[in-house]
Length: 309
Image (cartoon, rainbow, N blue to C red; front, side, top):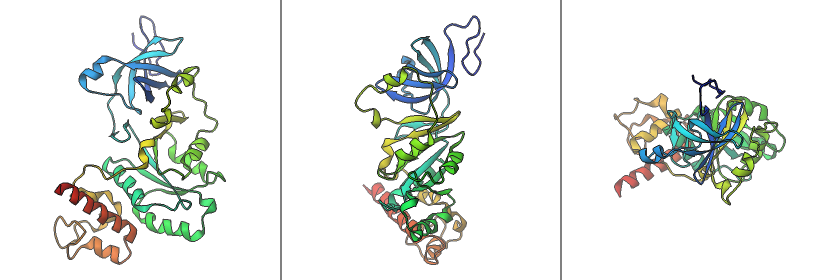
């Protein structure tokens, strides 16, 4: 006999098999959240090491329970991944919430655009969230709208302090696994605290186990926001470079370039120094924002230099 998807044991089935999601991994232990049952502390079977596969936070796994009372088990199988990031090492992200402050600190556009490019390369939809709207001037908010509204990303202005637009943010995250990304000092932690208010994960004594070790905050962790909704706090996301991609592919990571594709004088135009370039013309005409275009050129040259050496 089998188990149902909640992992409820049916007769003749020993040990109990369950499906869950890895919410944290520390020092060879993986914490697997099973909806309706709680969090199990698991070891991964040796078979993964042999195959060179490492379980990642965000992985959907099949596990078997070894000690029900202590909520311990073994991960038997990693289910197929939808996607995977290398830094931070996480899997099965539905979307990214890119958080910057409107002011204090002012947005670092180049870093922001790198986040967006990284998500485009992985085909992970991004939501742009600008926090601290309560202390911003109207022109600052208008300026950010001007840069990013034409890019096609959902745009949200929040205030964690005043709890402004939090319900709208919750609605965007519902039923998804969302990675939160952005520099320090923009209010990410405050937003996460607001998003998970009222949610009590059925952890029992596991939470004490999870806290061991000095470096827990350095690890990626999935936080449950509601049934089937998780947010991933990804500490490794605060600094990054454009990954190992070809410079020719970079233009496809800027959605606002798409309407001009195929309209340049030269096939395979890089949109940097070629004459008769429709993208460059659109940037000069203000149809593509100057900040976005300049960041594109900067990243393009970086990739060009990297290939040279």
